[in-house]
Amino acid sequence: MIKKALIILAISILTACLAKSVKEYQAPDGSKIKTVKCTSEQSKCFEKASSTSSDAGSYRVISSESHAGGLVADIIPGPITWYSMTYTCGPSDGKMPDFKFGGEHYSLPPPSPAPVVIKQKPTTTNCTTYGNSVTCNNY
Image (tube, rainbow, N blue to C red):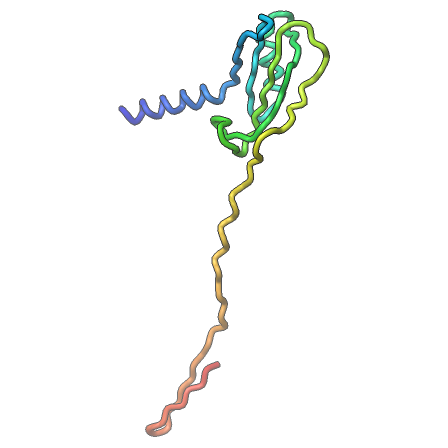
């Protein structure tokens, strides 16, 4: 019972972390500024920005960036590209975000060394006995 509850909790947390999130805050001039974070595809950021802008989906991009992160979070560099776009709803100035890559690049860990295999030819030993004497030959 507890094991099932923990699995459901873990899936819920992972699903929430993977969802596209939009944060909203107030700029110094009083306007509302929003930031959206998405993984893997820039188009997800465009879709979310349009759906959160009430002016017929129109918005103006203020800044954008991309960086390496993990599957669940973008705290440390990992194999997933995270995109972030800051925008304000309203008339667009036509500028597209450039999503310049910032931060550390993810590099795969070095491959483990291949096991060393020493190949030897099979040897055959042939021994013959003459009286009290034994003679052996290796081939």
